[in-house]
Amino acid sequence: MNIGIVCYPTYGGSGVVATELGMALAAKGHEVHFISYQQPVRLDNFKENIHYHEVNVSDYPLFDYPPYELVLSSKLVDVVKFAQLDILHVHYAIPHASAAYMAREILRSEGIEVPYITTLHGTDITLVGKDSSFEPVISFAINQSDAVTAVSESLKQDTYDHFRTERKIEVIPNFVCIHGCDSPEVDLDLKNRIAPNGERIIAHVSNFRKVKRISDVTAIFHKVHNKMPSKLLLIGDGPELHNAEVYCRENGLDHDLVVMGKVRDTERVVSIADLFLLPSEFESFGLAALEAMRAGVPVISSNTGGIPEVNEDGFSGYLSNVGDIEDMANKSMSILADNLTLQKFKMQAFEQAKKFDLEKILPKYEALYESLIK
Ligand code: GMT
Image 1 (cartoon, rainbow, N blue to C red):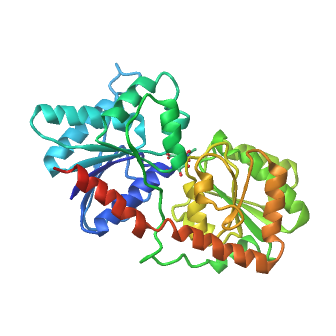
Image 2: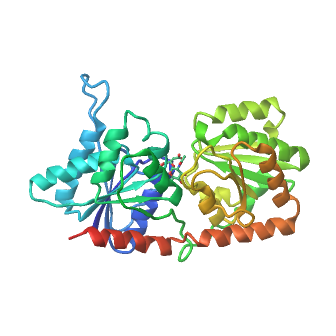
């Protein structure tokens, strides 16, 4: 199949899922065309069957707000014709679903049929999409999609709760590559540099926005640190990172804080950790937690949104109510207290990740594409 994938190129989860999906489809022999305003970060080495088309918005002085969505629609029309795409798969509803709708209708007026699939990822529905200024367009673009998927049952329900749609939404969860992919080797050099005295390493990866509750990450770490030698490893970048650094400085934790910033190979870095924290206010899925489990790292998370579908309480880690720092710290310590328990949870975290193996998920997307292509 000739597949067009539209996504955000940045470090956010939807862009990562779209890129990994596209690369896996290309490895199976499909021609995959990525369309975005920048080369997606995980698309660092172009392999066979992968193409990239950049959307360039001109900065004509009349435009206070450059019309990205229109330029994207035009680009989609162009790529569908030029590369004879069979299908468009857009990740994150805003503004990709409405741009795809526009492109499909332009092409239809010229006698070309190309269906589009919208994959809902989370904040497009739960935070941004339900803002009333977006709602009519998003509801329309979802209803007009030839197929709609959501990354968790929880997100599917949220979509029905917040938008005027009765459309069938298929849940296709996010994935990690296990079968046919090497497990990340624990970088012992890095581990020893970060924790030279065998301290426990607690990691968090995100875009450090408010929804991630970064102050809970540092507060949980503080409590654990009071009881056992430990290091906090923060990976990624965003508006709340500075506050986390300030908290650690003010509480004498700065010597045990390691800020890695944006890292391309997160799995390699996360695999040195003993525990992963995801205390988010909301999370439609929690891809970062799944990637940690894939690296054999147990997860302490909140029990919000789709996280309970990913992190199995008492098996791959533990779940707590949003904001219950005390509970999260106690559960963290119960996992980290002795090596036997820690090893058991590490193995169980990896076992849990196997349920989301790409090998199981990819055929679901392929079957969906095939069902829509005439
Ligand atoms: O919120 C983010 O971290 C970015 C956002 C995105 O769409 O790029 O993530 C959402 O999609 C991810 C991939 O499907 C999910 O794993 C995240 O849980 C979801 N984020 C939220 O719901 C807050």
